[in-house]
Amino acid sequence: MSNGTESKLINLDGVTLKIDFTKIHHNHEDLLTSRMLPHIWCPGCSLGTNVQALIRGLDMAGLNLDKEVVMISGIGCTGRASGYVEADGFHTTHGRAIPFALGVKLGNPGLHVIVFSGDGDLFAIGGNHFIHAARRKANITVICVNNGTYGLTGGQTSPTTFPNTVTPTTVPSDVVVEQPFNLVDLALGAGAAYVARYTSAHYTILPRIIKEAIRVNEEGYGLAFIDLISGCPALYGKRNGYDAVKMVKNFKEASVEIKPKPDGSHLLRKNTEVLFEKDKGYVRIPVGVFRRPKK
Image (cartoon, rainbow, N blue to C red):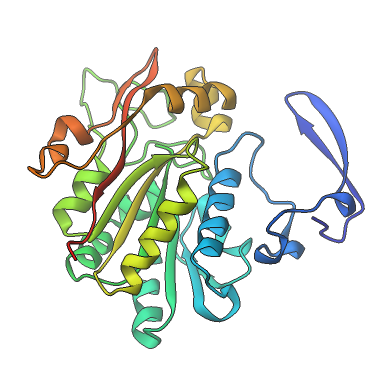
């Protein structure tokens, strides 16, 4: 993938590599904005994998990115993603990705509107917008890149940060313990039509899940939501003893597929709650599709 620069020096874990970008090509090059690349994300960041899954999902859905898709993201590392996808989009103000998305959808209901943003943006300042968009059955797809931190601004705690992790804004546990949001439960309770959770390590599954979420919108059932658990090795990881490789291995080992049950028992909290321990990382990540529309 060329960005008009012949070569660039990249530092990867203390090793300096000289990369000739004129000789690098992507298998979905036509779906990426080449003039914006190489991207700004840190080595090992989950966002490269996540955007790859997104564009593959859009491709699998058979969408024309130039005419049918609008991608909207908010503030944060994830917010930069809208600039790398070859579709119309907005990089919006903090917490306002969903209101922008609703405006686009109301203005042109025929468009496929994808919100791709982070846990801090969507569920702190943007939390109210999410729950009301879900209950109003807005036909948009919301993908939350959930890495449990405000990565772009220094690694502060977010609404999904687990207790006893090290951040610049961690409150001592003997003062107060802030439990993270269970985003699956939140989306289910707010009335989202489609609710799924996977991790960035599920890169072979995610395109199909994204395609399925888009189809839910296409058929008019309401908001589709994906809790995409991801890693931030640069800030969160360094402070808590996890590098990128360890994070991906942890995602794979901790993931447990939850199968839908006719009696709804798969929706009990014990089957939706993510478990985390400081010394072990993720202990249990329930993944799967927790709600599909009843046709």
